[in-house]
Length: 303
Image 1 (tube, helix red, strand yellow):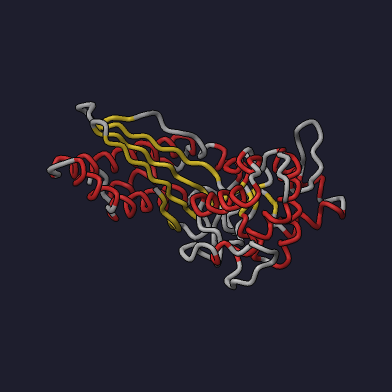
Image 2 (cartoon, helix red, strand yellow):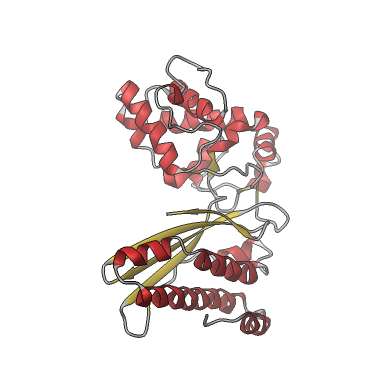
């Protein structure tokens, strides 16, 4: 590996004076580390299918990236520090130009975790949120859609309304919580198949929501979009809102408290997503790693 633990310890100490340079160091370290791993493996492989097998299952790559994040992000203490974190790297290459790599870091806690429907205290607020989303995009039957979501999130197979347990039609469908967007899209497909309402696909879901088992993460008030704030029932004026001001109104104070809508602090769960991309002679691979700043570890890997 290009970067040893000794190198990291020495470098990190010298970079603490400037958070801007600190974040640049992340880019350089991740790029160099991953290029070294992937390029070395690609030279060993006999075919591109072997490259795919080696790299897509390479726990070393994930381990090293987690190590880089854990050591680099431990000095993120405030919301202002996060401002400098959420940017994309330029496209980087190996010396011979045959390997291209890029990555980005972005927040997830600025969106709504639909698995909050599992929490009794938060459920009604999340259902109201979904109703507002469906109304905005003219989805015909919000009640049926919500029933599909709730019957997916609970573990039983009792229907809330007729036809709302997808697992009764598709035994391979998983109940218990919504795992990912690929899981969520199966719910959308089932809704469309049942009602022929294509408006469900017009919703810009990826800009609004995400899915995670951890339902204790905050909703980042500073980074919450004005549209998502409206869908949550918060007051938005001239495209902006202020959580500290909203707390002064009992109507909004309760929403903020129950849904844990607040600015980032180091003391509470906060999720970010790292997207990794590389290309070698036409062969492309993408990874999405979910990292919990509070727990300081990768909690999920998707492709």
